[in-house]
Length: 526
Image 1 (cartoon, rainbow, N blue to C red):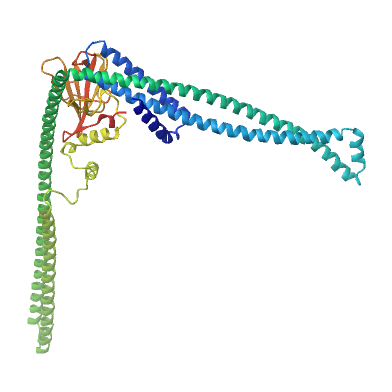
Image 2 (cartoon, rainbow, N blue to C red):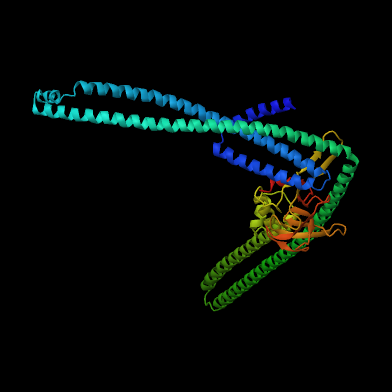
């Protein structure tokens, strides 16, 4: 035991190098909190022991008390390091100011000796009147005045240094007293730590003597935890199935909307093409009518010609007109054909784009939620805006979520072996010991997805979904919510029930994700 304590002191000495960066006030605040935690642990242990039944909870609390006291010893060591630093600093400062004070006193003594030798007023007057000029006399008077001021300043400096020395000596005395108190406290806490170790050994011995009973207790806990895990898995799968059905419904609606938009676009393009074809046909008919009218007019003019020359000229003019009109007709036909070809190509390009991506619309930009989802791992439980918002809100609260109830943590997250035995306890969350009947609250906004009766015991497990995260609250009496209830953070959802071993109030709290992977609540709660 002594060897282990020696190692502990060495460790705390080495750790204190890192902690020495803390201020003395920080260390003292931490020390006060550790002492408060120890007092609360002792109080809880007293309550549990009053049941006269050794339990795993007692062992867990004793182990926590040892860790807390080790932290307290380490904290006191840090305080001693800071105090040593203060003491060394004050000693050096006192030495520096003592040296400065000696120098000031020596100089002041020299000034007094000089003043004593020249104390006769006649000497001072002789010094002034022996000046070579009026200006020189003024300078000598000024010199005498400044010399007097210099001696007064010397006295003031000596008093200031003496005051600083007085304060530093008081600080040094205070630091030494604090160090003495800290050393006494450290010795006391190390002695108490030895008693805590013995207490733990006794608890382990008692539990080893009841190993079969403890195994049964752990088996019962594991049975409850497996039931909780199965219920969580069932609820998560239901939520996933529901989310998938909702997502499929929305996807079907989206596809139908896109199909309607595509059909409307195709109809619009068909109508544009038909209208253009009709316009071009009307234009061609008009020009053909004008051509025939021009031919008829030319023919009439030809028939009216009286001479062969006129006939020949009119014939040539008619031929030229026919040729020109034919060229215009061919040019119009080519222009119409080119325009129709371009229209067909444009319609084909639109159709090809639609065919390449039949489930999305290129003209529809991503929504804000879709932009957020594109930067996160895909989760069907975030397919709705509400689910996405709840997930993000839950994640933003990490390390700042409120505790679901009062009381202390009696069992931490993870595996807890019992020393000297093959027995180990597995906890998927944290266990708390609030007073029986005290309120239990939701840690974040969400939707109640399950209120499950624990085999007719009158206690319930409440499961709340927060987007793709789930929290569970077990051993709850008088639930205040029901399945489908919308809750806010700090909403009272029920009251704490009695512990299985009758040692007081008890609730079990877990956090899990959509894969039913349990997360350490310590990483999420403040």
